[in-house]
Amino acid sequence: MTLPNAPMVSRFNDINFINENQGWAVNSWGQIYYTPDGGDSWELQLNQGDSHFRSIGFFDSMNGWAGNVGYGEFGALDTTKLYQTSNGGESWEPFDDFIGPEPAGICGLQVVNDTVMCAVGRVRGPAFFTKTMDQGDTWVSTDLSEIVAGLIDLYFFNPDTGFIVGLTNESHSQSSGIVLRTVDGGESWEPMIITSRQGEWAWKISFPSRQVGYVSLQRNYEAPIYFLKTLDGGEIWEERLFSENYYFVQGIGFVNDTLGWIGGNSSSPSYETMDGGNSWSSAGFGSRMNRVQFINQNVGYACGRTVYKYSNTLNIVWDINTHSILPENPVINYPNPFNPSTTILAYLPESGTVNISILDILGRTVRTLINEKVFEGETWQEILWDGKNDQKKQVPGGIYFCRILNGTTIIQHKMVLIK
Image: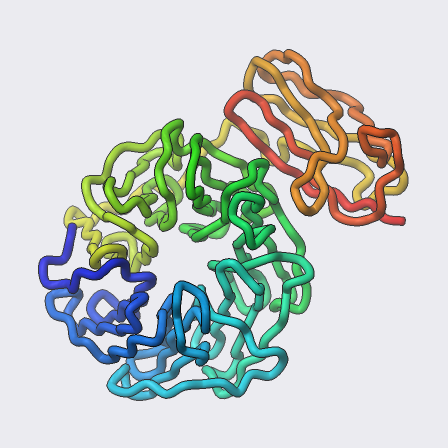
């Protein structure tokens, strides 16, 4: 439902609730709002017009951080990237003492545990990953511009393992969405998927459980519109169809593996799915929805033009089990890493034309291996890639993706060619 007393703005970019009652919301007008009572009342804690607050996160009721998008992005004039409070938001102090290169701006913040918070930025680049392990006393920043053009959001399971999402090119029309993973706390990153289309960014990420996750894909124009889904903790990401018609997607959030919402459009409401994204219907609320946060199975909040609240008044414990028509590993290759060639096996869930191609790390097609009619359930045997492109020239060593287009199913699998 729409909270009747919540402020109305162009868009709230982010919210963070530490429990069912206490929460904060930030927007592009440099404002930070606080509610002590689950959204029944709101207090404007900061009104700083030069700032464009993009994210917010609190360790507890007193200690929190707000991320500013940085000078020059969306017309922001504020050069400070992070603000901190130690009194519940009554006052906010600028922070600029980063260890490592100073980030250009902060778009996403996540509180990982009582002492660890991670951040990424910025939309349209340059790309930085920033982390504190001591509740904000020190922040370490890393420039990731060599591997990704811009970063928008993140999700960490623990201080070591997490995902960041963003774009492969600062120009939206030339960009694909990208998801990267770290298993060493951000010391190194590997791309898990680069989407098969240009003209889109990976915008928000939601993991309702350890195995099932979703990423929204924003397009500024043209349809169809897709989203990403994983059923194995982020090892394999599938491109799933959201809509054949154009819809400006930004926010996405799931209360469990199958019940979730997607939104972002300014003139149409958000959409709801009850079957893990297989089908979507109008949710009837949520213009410009950008962030969704669930406190538990029965209470959640979302922000967009205003602030919205989810209440499961029946106190139902939803079935969080989900089933897929795909086997656990629908595509594998061996050996992996390989040199000079590898064999690919792919399960095909639909009858129709299948296209199996090799993409480089920028999403460009290197080699088309298969493009022909198949029948449901077939498994291709010994599709050999010899490490060469369509011109029969050897490609350099590095990370490549095997992409399978089979009807409405799109799957990508990462492979490593070593030299």
